[in-house]
Length: 598
View 1 (spheres, helix red, strand yellow):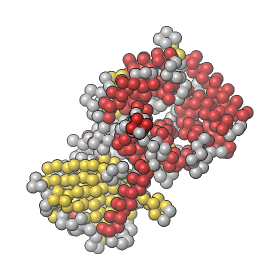
View 2 (cartoon, one colour; view 1 turned 90 degrees about the vertical axis):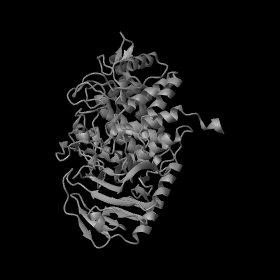
View 3 (cartoon, one colour; view 1 turned 45 degrees about the vertical axis):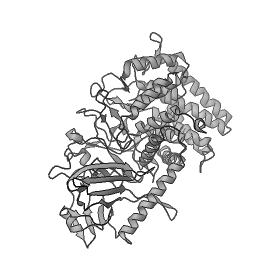
View 4 (tube, one colour; view 1 turned 30 degrees about the vertical axis):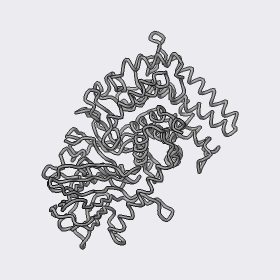
Protein backbone atom coordinates (compact mmCIF):
# COMPACT_ATOMS: atom_id res chain seq x y z
CA UNK A 1 0.00 0.00 0.00
CA UNK A 2 1.29 3.46 -0.91
CA UNK A 3 2.45 5.53 2.06
CA UNK A 4 4.40 8.71 2.72
CA UNK A 5 7.75 7.02 3.35
CA UNK A 6 9.16 8.95 0.38
CA UNK A 7 12.56 10.43 -0.51
CA UNK A 8 12.61 13.84 -2.26
CA UNK A 9 15.19 14.72 -4.87
CA UNK A 10 15.25 18.06 -6.73
CA UNK A 11 17.12 21.11 -7.97
CA UNK A 12 14.93 24.12 -7.03
CA UNK A 13 13.24 23.88 -10.47
CA UNK A 14 11.77 20.36 -10.49
CA UNK A 15 11.55 17.63 -7.87
CA UNK A 16 10.50 14.00 -7.55
CA UNK A 17 9.45 11.74 -4.69
CA UNK A 18 10.98 8.24 -4.68
CA UNK A 19 9.23 5.41 -2.83
CA UNK A 20 10.69 2.51 -0.88
CA UNK A 21 10.83 0.42 -4.07
CA UNK A 22 13.02 3.06 -5.71
CA UNK A 23 10.24 4.26 -8.02
CA UNK A 24 9.57 7.87 -8.94
CA UNK A 25 5.90 8.19 -7.91
CA UNK A 26 5.50 11.98 -7.92
CA UNK A 27 7.08 14.77 -9.94
CA UNK A 28 5.81 17.66 -12.07
CA UNK A 29 7.14 19.53 -15.11
CA UNK A 30 8.19 22.13 -16.03
CA UNK A 31 8.17 23.14 -12.34
CA UNK A 32 6.68 22.13 -9.00
CA UNK A 33 3.17 23.44 -9.78
CA UNK A 34 3.08 21.88 -13.26
CA UNK A 35 1.48 18.73 -14.67
CA UNK A 36 2.65 15.53 -12.91
CA UNK A 37 4.70 13.35 -15.23
CA UNK A 38 4.88 10.96 -12.26
CA UNK A 39 1.43 10.80 -10.65
CA UNK A 40 1.21 7.29 -9.14
CA UNK A 41 1.22 8.76 -5.61
CA UNK A 42 -2.32 10.03 -6.16
CA UNK A 43 -3.30 7.68 -8.97
CA UNK A 44 -5.22 5.32 -6.71
CA UNK A 45 -3.36 2.23 -7.98
CA UNK A 46 -0.15 0.54 -6.96
CA UNK A 47 2.60 0.69 -9.62
CA UNK A 48 2.72 -3.13 -9.45
CA UNK A 49 -0.86 -3.29 -10.78
CA UNK A 50 -1.27 -4.20 -14.43
CA UNK A 51 -1.73 -1.07 -16.51
CA UNK A 52 -0.70 1.35 -13.76
CA UNK A 53 0.91 4.58 -14.94
CA UNK A 54 2.64 7.66 -13.58
CA UNK A 55 5.93 6.21 -12.35
CA UNK A 56 9.52 5.40 -13.31
CA UNK A 57 10.78 2.09 -11.97
CA UNK A 58 14.15 0.40 -12.21
CA UNK A 59 13.25 -3.09 -11.00
CA UNK A 60 15.75 -5.79 -10.06
CA UNK A 61 14.50 -9.28 -10.99
CA UNK A 62 13.69 -11.39 -7.89
CA UNK A 63 14.44 -8.48 -5.59
CA UNK A 64 14.33 -9.28 -1.87
CA UNK A 65 15.65 -6.09 -0.30
CA UNK A 66 16.19 -2.40 -0.95
CA UNK A 67 18.32 -0.12 1.24
CA UNK A 68 18.16 3.64 0.73
CA UNK A 69 20.26 6.57 1.90
CA UNK A 70 21.20 10.06 0.81
CA UNK A 71 24.76 10.95 -0.03
CA UNK A 72 25.91 12.97 2.97
CA UNK A 73 24.62 16.56 3.06
CA UNK A 74 22.85 16.29 -0.32
CA UNK A 75 19.43 15.33 -1.76
CA UNK A 76 21.16 12.68 -3.95
CA UNK A 77 19.50 9.34 -3.26
CA UNK A 78 21.28 5.97 -3.39
CA UNK A 79 19.13 2.81 -3.44
CA UNK A 80 20.82 -0.60 -3.23
CA UNK A 81 18.64 -3.41 -4.64
CA UNK A 82 19.56 -7.03 -3.79
CA UNK A 83 17.97 -10.20 -5.27
CA UNK A 84 17.46 -13.67 -3.81
CA UNK A 85 20.82 -14.89 -5.18
CA UNK A 86 22.82 -11.96 -3.81
CA UNK A 87 23.09 -10.08 -7.09
CA UNK A 88 22.84 -6.33 -6.52
CA UNK A 89 22.67 -2.94 -8.22
CA UNK A 90 22.98 0.56 -6.88
CA UNK A 91 20.69 3.25 -8.31
CA UNK A 92 21.70 6.89 -7.87
CA UNK A 93 18.89 9.43 -8.36
CA UNK A 94 19.32 13.20 -8.56
CA UNK A 95 18.31 16.38 -10.34
CA UNK A 96 21.39 18.23 -11.71
CA UNK A 97 22.12 21.40 -9.73
CA UNK A 98 25.35 23.39 -9.78
CA UNK A 99 26.96 26.64 -10.86
CA UNK A 100 28.46 26.85 -14.31
CA UNK A 101 29.55 29.84 -16.37
CA UNK A 102 28.40 32.08 -13.53
CA UNK A 103 24.84 30.75 -13.62
CA UNK A 104 22.84 28.20 -11.70
CA UNK A 105 22.28 25.08 -13.82
CA UNK A 106 18.97 23.53 -12.80
CA UNK A 107 17.36 21.93 -15.88
CA UNK A 108 13.90 20.38 -16.07
CA UNK A 109 15.60 17.03 -15.81
CA UNK A 110 15.92 13.85 -13.75
CA UNK A 111 19.07 11.73 -13.77
CA UNK A 112 19.55 8.09 -12.78
CA UNK A 113 22.74 6.03 -12.75
CA UNK A 114 22.60 2.23 -12.30
CA UNK A 115 25.77 0.47 -11.18
CA UNK A 116 26.19 -3.32 -10.84
CA UNK A 117 27.73 -3.99 -7.42
CA UNK A 118 27.46 -7.78 -6.97
CA UNK A 119 27.00 -10.82 -9.22
CA UNK A 120 25.02 -10.69 -12.46
CA UNK A 121 21.93 -8.57 -11.73
CA UNK A 122 19.06 -8.31 -14.20
CA UNK A 123 16.78 -5.26 -14.33
CA UNK A 124 13.89 -3.89 -16.28
CA UNK A 125 13.07 -0.23 -16.71
CA UNK A 126 9.46 0.90 -16.75
CA UNK A 127 8.97 4.59 -17.52
CA UNK A 128 5.24 5.33 -17.79
CA UNK A 129 4.60 9.07 -17.69
CA UNK A 130 1.16 10.65 -17.44
CA UNK A 131 -0.15 13.78 -19.16
CA UNK A 132 -3.01 16.16 -18.46
CA UNK A 133 -3.27 15.19 -14.79
CA UNK A 134 -3.24 11.42 -14.93
CA UNK A 135 -4.26 10.96 -18.55
CA UNK A 136 -2.33 9.09 -21.22
CA UNK A 137 0.45 10.75 -23.16
CA UNK A 138 1.14 10.78 -26.88
CA UNK A 139 2.90 7.79 -28.43
CA UNK A 140 6.44 7.39 -27.15
CA UNK A 141 8.98 7.02 -29.93
CA UNK A 142 12.42 5.47 -30.06
CA UNK A 143 14.81 7.96 -31.67
CA UNK A 144 18.05 6.51 -32.98
CA UNK A 145 20.02 4.16 -30.76
CA UNK A 146 19.99 5.96 -27.44
CA UNK A 147 16.84 7.94 -26.79
CA UNK A 148 13.07 7.74 -26.42
CA UNK A 149 10.78 10.76 -26.82
CA UNK A 150 7.72 11.30 -24.61
CA UNK A 151 5.32 13.97 -25.91
CA UNK A 152 3.73 15.52 -22.82
CA UNK A 153 1.13 18.29 -22.78
CA UNK A 154 3.47 20.85 -21.18
CA UNK A 155 6.62 19.89 -23.07
CA UNK A 156 8.15 16.95 -24.88
CA UNK A 157 10.64 15.06 -22.72
CA UNK A 158 13.51 12.95 -24.01
CA UNK A 159 15.12 10.03 -22.21
CA UNK A 160 18.73 9.75 -23.31
CA UNK A 161 20.44 6.61 -22.07
CA UNK A 162 23.26 4.11 -22.42
CA UNK A 163 20.80 1.28 -21.67
CA UNK A 164 19.30 -0.77 -24.55
CA UNK A 165 16.31 1.34 -25.61
CA UNK A 166 14.50 -1.56 -27.29
CA UNK A 167 14.51 -3.57 -24.06
CA UNK A 168 13.27 -0.51 -22.20
CA UNK A 169 10.55 0.22 -24.72
CA UNK A 170 9.21 -3.34 -24.31
CA UNK A 171 9.87 -3.40 -20.56
CA UNK A 172 12.03 -6.56 -20.74
CA UNK A 173 14.55 -7.72 -18.15
CA UNK A 174 18.21 -7.54 -19.17
CA UNK A 175 21.54 -8.07 -17.49
CA UNK A 176 23.49 -5.12 -16.10
CA UNK A 177 27.19 -5.65 -16.86
CA UNK A 178 28.39 -2.04 -16.75
CA UNK A 179 27.09 1.25 -15.35
CA UNK A 180 23.97 2.56 -17.12
CA UNK A 181 23.05 6.23 -17.36
CA UNK A 182 19.61 7.81 -17.83
CA UNK A 183 18.85 11.51 -18.41
CA UNK A 184 15.17 12.47 -18.71
CA UNK A 185 15.08 16.09 -19.79
CA UNK A 186 13.95 18.48 -22.52
CA UNK A 187 13.65 17.18 -26.08
CA UNK A 188 17.12 18.29 -27.16
CA UNK A 189 20.15 16.45 -28.47
CA UNK A 190 22.41 15.39 -25.63
CA UNK A 191 25.83 16.89 -26.21
CA UNK A 192 28.90 14.89 -25.30
CA UNK A 193 29.40 11.43 -23.86
CA UNK A 194 26.31 10.49 -21.84
CA UNK A 195 28.09 8.48 -19.16
CA UNK A 196 30.97 10.92 -18.64
CA UNK A 197 28.63 13.93 -18.66
CA UNK A 198 26.21 12.45 -16.10
CA UNK A 199 29.07 11.31 -13.87
CA UNK A 200 30.43 14.86 -13.97
CA UNK A 201 26.95 16.28 -13.23
CA UNK A 202 26.70 13.94 -10.24
CA UNK A 203 30.03 15.12 -8.89
CA UNK A 204 29.20 18.79 -9.44
CA UNK A 205 25.74 18.42 -7.84
CA UNK A 206 27.23 16.62 -4.86
CA UNK A 207 29.83 19.37 -4.40
CA UNK A 208 27.23 22.17 -4.78
CA UNK A 209 25.00 20.81 -2.00
CA UNK A 210 27.89 20.00 0.35
CA UNK A 211 29.20 23.54 -0.12
CA UNK A 212 25.74 24.97 0.69
CA UNK A 213 25.43 22.86 3.84
CA UNK A 214 28.95 23.86 4.88
CA UNK A 215 27.75 27.46 5.15
CA UNK A 216 24.95 26.65 7.62
CA UNK A 217 25.27 27.64 11.27
CA UNK A 218 23.86 24.49 12.82
CA UNK A 219 23.43 23.44 16.48
CA UNK A 220 25.68 20.85 18.10
CA UNK A 221 22.91 18.32 18.70
CA UNK A 222 20.56 16.83 16.10
CA UNK A 223 22.81 17.96 13.25
CA UNK A 224 21.45 15.39 10.78
CA UNK A 225 17.87 16.43 11.58
CA UNK A 226 18.65 20.09 10.93
CA UNK A 227 20.71 19.52 7.78
CA UNK A 228 18.12 17.25 6.17
CA UNK A 229 15.30 19.64 7.05
CA UNK A 230 17.27 22.61 5.66
CA UNK A 231 18.06 20.82 2.39
CA UNK A 232 14.40 19.87 1.98
CA UNK A 233 13.25 23.44 2.68
CA UNK A 234 15.63 24.66 -0.01
CA UNK A 235 14.10 22.13 -2.43
CA UNK A 236 10.77 23.86 -1.78
CA UNK A 237 12.11 27.15 -3.19
CA UNK A 238 11.58 27.91 -6.88
CA UNK A 239 14.95 29.51 -7.37
CA UNK A 240 14.05 31.44 -10.52
CA UNK A 241 11.60 33.69 -8.65
CA UNK A 242 12.42 33.03 -4.98
CA UNK A 243 8.93 31.67 -4.20
CA UNK A 244 8.77 29.00 -1.47
CA UNK A 245 6.01 26.40 -1.83
CA UNK A 246 4.30 24.91 1.22
CA UNK A 247 4.92 21.31 0.07
CA UNK A 248 5.87 19.38 -3.06
CA UNK A 249 2.52 17.54 -3.35
CA UNK A 250 -1.20 18.01 -3.75
CA UNK A 251 -4.17 16.22 -2.23
CA UNK A 252 -2.62 13.93 0.36
CA UNK A 253 -5.59 13.79 2.79
CA UNK A 254 -5.31 15.16 6.32
CA UNK A 255 -6.77 11.84 7.45
CA UNK A 256 -8.42 8.83 5.84
CA UNK A 257 -11.45 9.71 3.73
CA UNK A 258 -11.50 13.26 5.09
CA UNK A 259 -11.97 15.17 1.81
CA UNK A 260 -9.40 17.59 3.32
CA UNK A 261 -7.23 17.28 0.22
CA UNK A 262 -5.46 20.49 -0.75
CA UNK A 263 -2.93 21.58 -3.35
CA UNK A 264 0.12 22.92 -1.49
CA UNK A 265 2.41 23.60 -4.48
CA UNK A 266 2.07 27.36 -4.13
CA UNK A 267 3.66 30.11 -2.07
CA UNK A 268 1.75 30.95 1.10
CA UNK A 269 2.99 34.23 2.54
CA UNK A 270 2.60 32.72 6.02
CA UNK A 271 4.41 29.42 5.37
CA UNK A 272 7.23 31.17 3.52
CA UNK A 273 7.69 33.57 6.45
CA UNK A 274 8.17 30.66 8.84
CA UNK A 275 10.55 29.01 6.37
CA UNK A 276 12.86 31.99 5.97
CA UNK A 277 12.69 32.60 9.73
CA UNK A 278 14.00 29.08 10.38
CA UNK A 279 16.64 29.19 7.67
CA UNK A 280 17.79 32.61 8.92
CA UNK A 281 18.58 30.93 12.24
CA UNK A 282 20.99 28.76 10.25
CA UNK A 283 22.39 31.64 8.21
CA UNK A 284 20.96 30.48 4.85
CA UNK A 285 20.75 34.00 3.47
CA UNK A 286 20.45 32.88 -0.18
CA UNK A 287 16.92 31.60 0.48
CA UNK A 288 15.98 34.82 2.30
CA UNK A 289 17.35 37.06 -0.46
CA UNK A 290 15.56 35.08 -3.17
CA UNK A 291 12.29 35.25 -1.26
CA UNK A 292 12.60 38.97 -0.57
CA UNK A 293 12.96 39.53 -4.31
CA UNK A 294 9.74 37.55 -4.81
CA UNK A 295 7.98 39.59 -2.09
CA UNK A 296 9.03 42.91 -3.61
CA UNK A 297 7.28 41.87 -6.82
CA UNK A 298 4.19 40.78 -4.87
CA UNK A 299 4.04 44.10 -3.00
CA UNK A 300 4.55 46.04 -6.26
CA UNK A 301 1.64 44.17 -7.85
CA UNK A 302 -0.71 44.34 -4.85
CA UNK A 303 -3.87 46.23 -5.65
CA UNK A 304 -4.02 49.10 -3.16
CA UNK A 305 -1.82 47.18 -0.77
CA UNK A 306 -4.13 44.12 -0.59
CA UNK A 307 -2.12 40.94 -0.03
CA UNK A 308 -3.54 37.50 -0.80
CA UNK A 309 -2.75 34.52 1.45
CA UNK A 310 -0.93 32.75 -1.40
CA UNK A 311 0.38 33.19 -4.94
CA UNK A 312 1.77 31.01 -7.71
CA UNK A 313 5.52 30.45 -8.00
CA UNK A 314 5.69 33.09 -10.74
CA UNK A 315 3.56 35.44 -8.63
CA UNK A 316 0.27 34.45 -10.26
CA UNK A 317 -2.65 35.90 -8.33
CA UNK A 318 -5.39 33.58 -9.65
CA UNK A 319 -5.09 29.88 -8.70
CA UNK A 320 -8.50 28.53 -9.63
CA UNK A 321 -9.31 25.25 -7.91
CA UNK A 322 -10.52 22.25 -9.90
CA UNK A 323 -10.65 18.46 -9.64
CA UNK A 324 -8.35 16.15 -11.63
CA UNK A 325 -10.88 13.53 -12.71
CA UNK A 326 -8.31 11.07 -14.09
CA UNK A 327 -6.71 10.57 -10.67
CA UNK A 328 -8.49 8.54 -7.98
CA UNK A 329 -6.42 10.03 -5.15
CA UNK A 330 -3.92 8.84 -2.57
CA UNK A 331 -5.00 5.26 -1.75
CA UNK A 332 -8.13 6.02 -3.78
CA UNK A 333 -9.14 8.81 -1.37
CA UNK A 334 -9.99 11.62 -3.78
CA UNK A 335 -10.55 14.24 -4.83
CA UNK A 336 -7.24 15.36 -6.34
CA UNK A 337 -7.30 19.14 -6.40
CA UNK A 338 -5.35 21.40 -8.76
CA UNK A 339 -5.16 25.03 -7.65
CA UNK A 340 -6.31 26.41 -4.33
CA UNK A 341 -9.36 28.61 -3.76
CA UNK A 342 -7.76 30.05 -0.62
CA UNK A 343 -6.11 32.62 -2.92
CA UNK A 344 -9.42 34.51 -2.85
CA UNK A 345 -9.79 34.37 0.94
CA UNK A 346 -9.25 37.26 3.29
CA UNK A 347 -6.47 36.43 5.76
CA UNK A 348 -5.14 39.50 7.54
CA UNK A 349 -2.10 37.80 9.07
CA UNK A 350 -0.35 38.03 5.67
CA UNK A 351 0.35 41.73 6.26
CA UNK A 352 2.38 40.93 9.32
CA UNK A 353 4.27 38.13 7.62
CA UNK A 354 5.27 40.36 4.70
CA UNK A 355 6.75 42.94 7.05
CA UNK A 356 8.32 40.35 9.37
CA UNK A 357 10.05 38.64 6.43
CA UNK A 358 11.45 41.98 5.30
CA UNK A 359 12.46 43.31 8.71
CA UNK A 360 15.90 41.69 8.79
CA UNK A 361 16.88 43.38 5.53
CA UNK A 362 16.92 46.76 7.28
CA UNK A 363 19.54 45.55 9.78
CA UNK A 364 21.64 42.74 8.27
CA UNK A 365 24.83 44.05 6.72
CA UNK A 366 25.74 40.65 5.21
CA UNK A 367 23.03 40.99 2.56
CA UNK A 368 23.95 41.82 -1.02
CA UNK A 369 20.96 44.19 -1.04
CA UNK A 370 19.99 45.82 2.23
CA UNK A 371 16.56 47.44 2.39
CA UNK A 372 16.36 51.22 2.03
CA UNK A 373 13.86 54.06 2.27
CA UNK A 374 12.07 53.09 -0.95
CA UNK A 375 11.52 49.56 0.40
CA UNK A 376 10.23 51.00 3.65
CA UNK A 377 7.77 53.22 1.79
CA UNK A 378 6.48 50.23 -0.19
CA UNK A 379 6.01 48.28 3.05
CA UNK A 380 4.12 51.19 4.61
CA UNK A 381 1.27 50.42 2.17
CA UNK A 382 1.18 46.92 3.65
CA UNK A 383 1.25 48.43 7.15
CA UNK A 384 -1.74 50.61 6.27
CA UNK A 385 -3.71 47.50 5.38
CA UNK A 386 -2.68 45.88 8.67
CA UNK A 387 -3.91 48.93 10.56
CA UNK A 388 -7.20 49.04 8.68
CA UNK A 389 -7.92 45.33 9.11
CA UNK A 390 -6.51 44.36 12.49
CA UNK A 391 -9.98 44.14 14.08
CA UNK A 392 -11.88 42.88 11.04
CA UNK A 393 -13.10 39.29 10.48
CA UNK A 394 -11.09 36.93 8.27
CA UNK A 395 -10.77 33.23 7.48
CA UNK A 396 -7.83 32.87 9.87
CA UNK A 397 -4.61 30.98 9.42
CA UNK A 398 -6.42 27.64 9.20
CA UNK A 399 -8.34 28.96 6.17
CA UNK A 400 -11.89 28.21 7.26
CA UNK A 401 -14.07 28.27 4.16
CA UNK A 402 -17.54 28.82 5.60
CA UNK A 403 -17.22 31.24 8.49
CA UNK A 404 -15.23 34.28 9.58
CA UNK A 405 -14.21 35.77 12.92
CA UNK A 406 -11.78 38.36 14.20
CA UNK A 407 -8.87 35.99 14.87
CA UNK A 408 -6.41 36.89 17.62
CA UNK A 409 -3.51 35.44 15.61
CA UNK A 410 -4.35 37.64 12.61
CA UNK A 411 -4.69 40.72 14.84
CA UNK A 412 -1.35 39.96 16.51
CA UNK A 413 0.31 39.68 13.09
CA UNK A 414 -1.14 43.09 12.17
CA UNK A 415 0.33 44.43 15.42
CA UNK A 416 3.68 42.91 14.46
CA UNK A 417 3.53 44.61 11.04
CA UNK A 418 3.24 48.03 12.69
CA UNK A 419 5.72 47.23 15.45
CA UNK A 420 8.42 46.05 13.01
CA UNK A 421 7.80 49.02 10.71
CA UNK A 422 8.62 51.21 13.70
CA UNK A 423 11.87 49.26 14.15
CA UNK A 424 12.71 49.64 10.45
CA UNK A 425 12.03 53.39 10.57
CA UNK A 426 14.37 53.70 13.53
CA UNK A 427 17.10 51.84 11.64
CA UNK A 428 16.68 54.29 8.75
CA UNK A 429 16.72 57.32 11.08
CA UNK A 430 13.10 58.23 10.27
CA UNK A 431 12.00 59.34 13.74
CA UNK A 432 8.62 60.72 12.67
CA UNK A 433 7.66 57.47 10.94
CA UNK A 434 8.95 55.45 13.90
CA UNK A 435 6.65 57.32 16.26
CA UNK A 436 3.75 57.00 13.80
CA UNK A 437 4.02 53.20 13.50
CA UNK A 438 4.79 52.68 17.17
CA UNK A 439 1.58 54.55 18.07
CA UNK A 440 -0.42 52.30 15.75
CA UNK A 441 1.22 49.19 17.20
CA UNK A 442 0.39 50.33 20.73
CA UNK A 443 -3.24 50.94 19.80
CA UNK A 444 -3.60 47.52 18.16
CA UNK A 445 -2.02 45.89 21.22
CA UNK A 446 -4.53 47.60 23.49
CA UNK A 447 -7.41 46.39 21.30
CA UNK A 448 -6.17 42.79 21.35
CA UNK A 449 -5.64 42.82 25.11
CA UNK A 450 -9.15 44.17 25.65
CA UNK A 451 -10.99 41.96 23.13
CA UNK A 452 -9.20 38.59 23.27
CA UNK A 453 -8.58 38.33 27.01
CA UNK A 454 -11.05 36.16 29.01
CA UNK A 455 -10.95 37.33 32.57
CA UNK A 456 -13.17 34.46 33.74
CA UNK A 457 -10.72 31.75 32.63
CA UNK A 458 -7.54 33.89 32.76
CA UNK A 459 -6.49 33.18 29.18
CA UNK A 460 -6.57 34.58 25.67
CA UNK A 461 -9.29 33.47 23.26
CA UNK A 462 -8.51 32.61 19.65
CA UNK A 463 -11.21 35.07 18.54
CA UNK A 464 -12.26 38.51 19.74
CA UNK A 465 -15.14 38.24 22.19
CA UNK A 466 -15.19 34.46 21.85
CA UNK A 467 -14.19 31.51 23.98
CA UNK A 468 -12.15 29.57 21.41
CA UNK A 469 -9.01 27.50 21.86
CA UNK A 470 -6.53 27.40 19.01
CA UNK A 471 -2.87 26.31 18.93
CA UNK A 472 -1.95 29.55 17.13
CA UNK A 473 -2.28 31.34 20.49
CA UNK A 474 1.11 29.83 21.39
CA UNK A 475 2.59 32.03 18.67
CA UNK A 476 1.97 35.13 20.79
CA UNK A 477 5.28 34.13 22.36
CA UNK A 478 7.26 33.88 19.13
CA UNK A 479 5.86 37.23 17.97
CA UNK A 480 7.05 38.83 21.24
CA UNK A 481 3.48 39.95 21.91
CA UNK A 482 3.57 38.18 25.28
CA UNK A 483 6.61 37.08 27.28
CA UNK A 484 7.09 33.61 28.83
CA UNK A 485 6.84 35.16 32.31
CA UNK A 486 3.54 36.92 31.58
CA UNK A 487 0.79 35.23 33.61
CA UNK A 488 -1.54 35.80 30.65
CA UNK A 489 0.69 33.62 28.48
CA UNK A 490 1.04 30.96 31.15
CA UNK A 491 -2.73 30.79 31.57
CA UNK A 492 -3.22 30.60 27.81
CA UNK A 493 -0.60 27.88 27.37
CA UNK A 494 -2.12 25.84 30.18
CA UNK A 495 -5.58 26.06 28.57
CA UNK A 496 -4.32 25.25 25.07
CA UNK A 497 -2.34 22.25 26.29
CA UNK A 498 -5.28 20.93 28.34
CA UNK A 499 -7.76 21.40 25.50
CA UNK A 500 -5.77 20.45 22.41
CA UNK A 501 -3.00 18.07 23.44
CA UNK A 502 -3.60 14.42 22.56
CA UNK A 503 -0.82 12.39 24.13
CA UNK A 504 2.35 13.60 22.41
CA UNK A 505 0.58 15.60 19.72
CA UNK A 506 -1.26 18.90 19.36
CA UNK A 507 -4.44 19.57 17.40
CA UNK A 508 -4.93 22.92 15.66
CA UNK A 509 -8.36 23.17 17.27
CA UNK A 510 -10.91 20.69 18.60
CA UNK A 511 -14.12 22.21 17.25
CA UNK A 512 -16.04 21.34 14.10
CA UNK A 513 -15.04 23.11 10.90
CA UNK A 514 -16.21 22.92 7.29
CA UNK A 515 -15.51 19.15 7.21
CA UNK A 516 -16.50 18.13 10.75
CA UNK A 517 -14.14 17.37 13.64
CA UNK A 518 -10.43 17.11 12.80
CA UNK A 519 -8.99 13.66 13.54
CA UNK A 520 -5.27 14.23 13.10
CA UNK A 521 -2.78 16.42 14.92
CA UNK A 522 -0.96 19.21 13.10
CA UNK A 523 2.77 18.58 13.44
CA UNK A 524 3.94 22.19 13.62
CA UNK A 525 1.59 22.84 16.55
CA UNK A 526 3.46 20.19 18.53
CA UNK A 527 6.71 22.00 17.79
CA UNK A 528 5.13 25.28 18.91
CA UNK A 529 4.22 23.55 22.17
CA UNK A 530 7.81 22.27 22.57
CA UNK A 531 9.14 25.83 22.22
CA UNK A 532 6.64 27.15 24.77
CA UNK A 533 7.46 24.36 27.25
CA UNK A 534 11.15 25.27 26.99
CA UNK A 535 10.58 28.97 27.54
CA UNK A 536 8.27 28.43 30.50
CA UNK A 537 10.75 26.33 32.46
CA UNK A 538 9.73 22.82 31.41
CA UNK A 539 12.94 22.02 29.58
CA UNK A 540 12.96 18.28 30.28
CA UNK A 541 9.38 17.92 29.00
CA UNK A 542 10.28 19.89 25.87
CA UNK A 543 13.29 17.72 25.15
CA UNK A 544 11.41 14.43 25.68
CA UNK A 545 8.58 15.55 23.40
CA UNK A 546 11.03 16.67 20.71
CA UNK A 547 12.87 13.35 20.80
CA UNK A 548 9.56 11.54 20.44
CA UNK A 549 8.54 13.67 17.44
CA UNK A 550 11.82 12.77 15.74
CA UNK A 551 10.87 9.08 15.90
CA UNK A 552 7.86 9.89 13.69
CA UNK A 553 10.00 10.92 10.71
CA UNK A 554 10.12 8.99 7.46
CA UNK A 555 13.23 7.09 6.39
CA UNK A 556 14.31 10.27 4.61
CA UNK A 557 14.21 12.13 7.95
CA UNK A 558 11.17 14.24 7.09
CA UNK A 559 7.58 14.85 8.17
CA UNK A 560 4.28 15.55 6.44
CA UNK A 561 1.70 18.02 7.70
CA UNK A 562 -0.41 15.81 9.96
CA UNK A 563 -0.14 12.73 12.16
CA UNK A 564 -2.67 10.30 13.60
CA UNK A 565 -2.19 10.75 17.38
CA UNK A 566 -3.22 7.12 18.00
CA UNK A 567 -1.40 5.16 15.27
CA UNK A 568 1.43 7.60 14.52
CA UNK A 569 0.71 7.37 10.79
CA UNK A 570 1.64 10.42 8.72
CA UNK A 571 -1.01 12.24 6.65
CA UNK A 572 -1.20 15.47 4.68
CA UNK A 573 1.07 16.94 2.04
CA UNK A 574 4.77 16.06 2.08
CA UNK A 575 7.37 17.16 2.85
CA UNK A 576 5.62 20.00 4.68
CA UNK A 577 7.62 23.17 5.23
CA UNK A 578 5.92 23.94 8.56
CA UNK A 579 6.99 20.58 9.97
CA UNK A 580 10.59 20.96 8.76
CA UNK A 581 10.67 24.48 10.24
CA UNK A 582 9.50 23.06 13.57
CA UNK A 583 12.33 20.52 13.66
CA UNK A 584 14.94 23.19 12.89
CA UNK A 585 13.61 25.71 15.40
CA UNK A 586 13.36 23.20 18.24
CA UNK A 587 16.79 21.70 17.58
CA UNK A 588 18.40 25.16 17.60
CA UNK A 589 16.51 26.06 20.78
CA UNK A 590 17.12 22.88 22.76
CA UNK A 591 20.65 21.94 21.72
CA UNK A 592 23.62 22.25 24.02
CA UNK A 593 25.97 24.99 22.83
CA UNK A 594 29.13 24.33 20.84
CA UNK A 595 31.01 25.74 23.82
CA UNK A 596 30.16 22.55 25.71
CA UNK A 597 32.66 20.55 23.63
CA UNK A 598 35.31 23.18 23.11
